[in-house]
Length: 449
Image 1 (cartoon, rainbow, N blue to C red):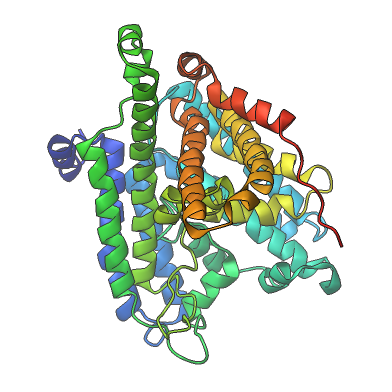
Image 2: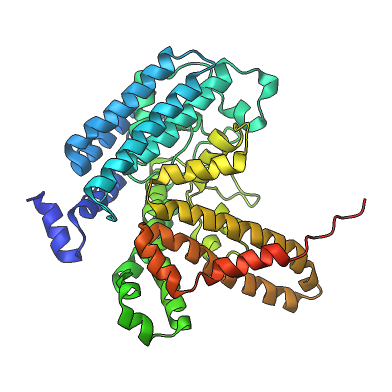
């Protein structure tokens, strides 16, 4: 038996107990965030009090959701902090990186062993978030204590840390209640500025986050409603009679719908987390030209841009934004050999070890390279008039979504066997077409100087 409230939610909604606990914590974050931004605002409470509140609430959420597994999270963060304290400055980013990646990898393997092909929400989710935070922190410490200022790019100069955070600062950053369960991730400097109240713009105080939080909450409810109206069901693809009785186009449409419903779960979790962060006062990113406040500093997804993008690059740039930024800062900008390949490898490892993860990123790479090459050749021919360009944009939007669905389906099915059945049904058509286009499409002519 679980907590009575959890049991009630599972009976009414049909959610599993692990998801019900997650939902309770996310909804419980709202009154805590409102309390944090009012009674515990920087003007009324010291940074230490605010850190302790974030840490305590975050740990309680983890205990409620994961029980004794919270000890594994404390082990991970504790070892990483010791490595930051005692590793030589020239090696701190490497020692922390390899410990965090190894610990996370063992967690993924354990999950595969205990819940193969399952989606149980356990401690591996927070472990993935902690891995991003602690490796980003270690790189910032490395940049601030070992590298020369002239060797840093502008982003690294801003994020460089020249002193080791205190235990309270570090643990609060790792377990802050607004992001410990589902993100988003962010860098330590932004978090410390938020805690001490220095995240202001032009001397103005941070405006109220109630309105953006409310709007994002409504958006989150909208997205999760789709999952109740049309639950994601992949099993028809593994029913031979269903496959034979439905046309290719019907199956492709059903595939798109199931992928959209699956994305709605992520839209819900990330938008809700963004909403809670804004309500607590975190996420303010200055003012627009018209004077309105921007609350997108730690936004992790832009659903409208993801669903309506006219290119694969724009689509991927607006999906899981925090993870993409982490990959760029920790891996791509620091790899001395094959940075693109290393970044995709790290991304796949971060997700786990199911074959579907690696198949997805290899497919996405093929689709992205092909679309980039085709766009350079074809797009100029559609810029003659507004109507023709609108037709081109509509066509590329549909193609982008179809391609990303055929790639991301592997993230949903996970195992090789299930992915093989589905791709066999569609004859690997997107991959074959993209390979032919990439091989036989002429490269764009270089521009004359």
